[in-house]
Length: 59
Image (tube, rainbow, N blue to C red; front, side):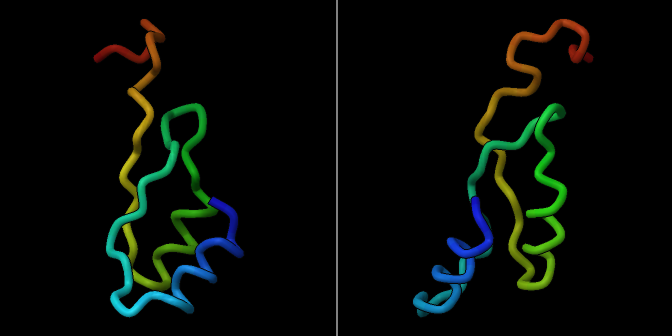
């Protein structure tokens, strides 16, 4: 999610989202977005399967 998309959402919404669903996984952790969302107390819900079949990530 680009920062300008988040800004547009927050400017227009009547009820601020508490969760935003984006691609997030160990290879793409979305650290910058997480920091930006913290300012508005919004959490990330990852939609990408953990590891996407990478056996080295199995617990």
